[in-house]
Length: 163
Image (tube, rainbow, N blue to C red; front, side, top):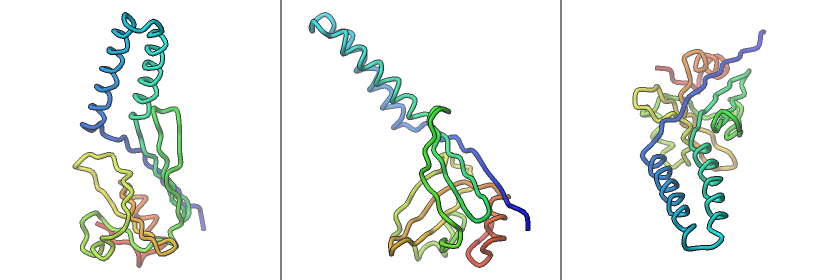
């Protein structure tokens, strides 16, 4: 039997919250520039704010990469195409259910903790993957492509509901 590999990269939509954070940081930087005339060591505050601006602006530029390899699914968060962080990893044999978002069979997992790794665009096909680890229900929202759903279905057909 050959190895099955599927991956997908999803860019996160810039939300109103992200724009508000960027505007607030820019305003604080402008205030720091004007504080140069009042505070003798205001130049240090300016450099601090510029560094903080760069860090926050880069951390708000997010992509998610989904990888499915022979029963293992990994979700990485990529910030500003420079830093990568693994935010979720699991094996399909520990999965309870994979179904399109809004499917009635997901109602029994309504009290699960939700992890949202979607792009935030309304027209995307969002799936919900439910895991129970140590009695704690976890629901992972993500946007796999048809090839990835098919690969998961081949591994665990009774746990997958396809569109």
